Image 1 (cartoon, rainbow, N blue to C red):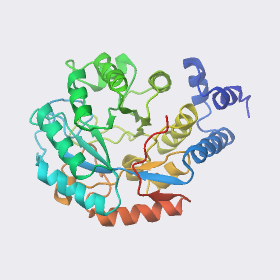
Image 2 (cartoon, rainbow, N blue to C red; image 1 turned 90 degrees about the vertical axis):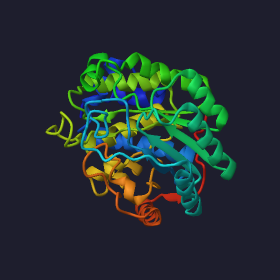
Image 3 (cartoon, one colour; image 1 turned 180 degrees about the vertical axis):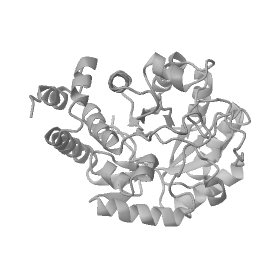
Image 4 (cartoon, rainbow, N blue to C red; image 1 turned 60 degrees about the vertical axis):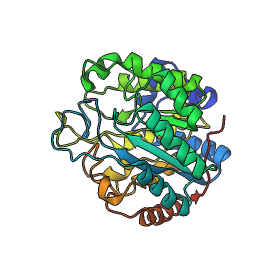
Length: 348
């Protein structure tokens, strides 16, 4: 095998230049290189988090969205979506069920739905914090002003997920309509960091038009942002988008990148995503075995889960929350790890 200096450098320094990330990506199918990166990723993950796997109870509370991202099944312009919104009481009921099952982090995820004003969101956050003071609240509700993020933080939100999707301007333009901007998305992430959130960024692997240079740019951006969480998963097309006929992203490349990201950011919270499990029956277990340490089972009401369809064939849409947790617990154990009942905060 060729000289692996770039791998040694990543392991030693935890960061590279864009040219070096591009060089690193040339090793993505080299068994020896992949094995070395995986071994180091697992070593770091065990050094900081042992064999713990943290759970996040996902509550998909609205599938209305004002945006029209070209790849997304719930985008504004899709007339075939059966839209829904959960009430505050329905969201709290999901939390109660999740708390009983051992979840200590709730993720409120939804489209950018103007119905949920800042005040409405703050009221929901306060209600959850009042009833479950020992739990963390993660929001994933898109691009907002710094003042909105501040209000949510004051109401009790702890974490915020906002995938940057791509750090390359021209690639961003091919995935999003003109009224959206990569500069604004990045600004939101830096605002969230400044306000003291535990911040999550991330990108799709194999999204339409993505090049290895784009992925190198994504890694460089993560290196600059230093998020506490990184969510990556393979792109999966949705039948009601212009990218319906595109190929899904690669599971193997996603696994390779999970190891790379763990080495770049040793203390990061790194999910084995639902998208991985959708493309590969053992995708989430494979994710855990290459450096991931988080899983995000669904606490949404079963009747709503199929309606929150960002991409086709999403798994676990018909399972009760308890069933889903039981199944995940067994899967995690089979990978040699242990599902824990903890908030699972990022180490700083």
